[in-house]
Length: 399
Image (cartoon, rainbow, N blue to C red; front, top):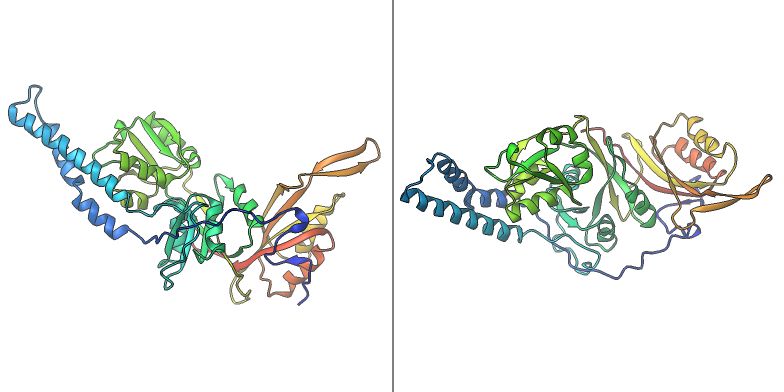
């Protein structure tokens, strides 16, 4: 093998000042099982259909209701109260997302692949996990870093995290976490995002006063939300907003989230594909403790990160090692080093100057089993002060 010690496969990056996180061990692995069938049964039995029927009857009364109609009003109010209580009781049965203080227990179902992700059931990250592994057991986590830790501590087999969106751009936090943690990229998932407007059963779009969702989802649905003339409230997770509206019975609030979130939390889909741009794609990375064996029997992609010495044309030379071998670059991202952000460079005019010291993340279309990719990285080491292969994995070409 041509690659030697200069290429780090998933190890710690001591020369960059990256250490272990030092978080205290954490604890309970929640057995996240797909709740679709059970929740569907709950929706049918919980009284939503009864509530819709009673509301239809209520709207046909005259201005001076008779005594039977007053009794009917009491029935309707009691039904709404019962539905709200049942919603809150049922949502309590969902697994609480893992946090950094929850890691201690071991998985209790080894027959299924366990996939960690940030968010609650019904999130787009969970959709991506189910697309990659249709029969997996998903493990919700509070934060992106918790999803990494769940894999590192053997609470999950893999993690699925978003890395870029065609409208919103790169998720920089996850680029930083890729370098900080010792997981390997073993796959990618491209998910066509379908933004839906959701609300409680019986609520019409013109009755909404506010809409809750993730800031990017709200920004990507600007046209329809402007027409509705509603206030917008930012939350950390779109599916979490659906859970909140359902559990609190908020009849003046809508949600921008997935159709699956509507199914899970008993909400109605008022409109689908409400995003301003129909071509809304999010790319997710699949991470694991161990790398996979690179092959040449299908299209592969390789992701790397490196740093360069300061000097004229150094980045051009680094990128040329791929062009000289006809290797296509699909992504380049630069991030200042968090631990050593500034570099002092001698300058003949002013004595010295300080520049940002950058990390460069690159994706290229080649397998590490191909000599051209191996030779390109050997050549890159002539200019790079640090080089690490983040993963070599099959390309996802199906939406």
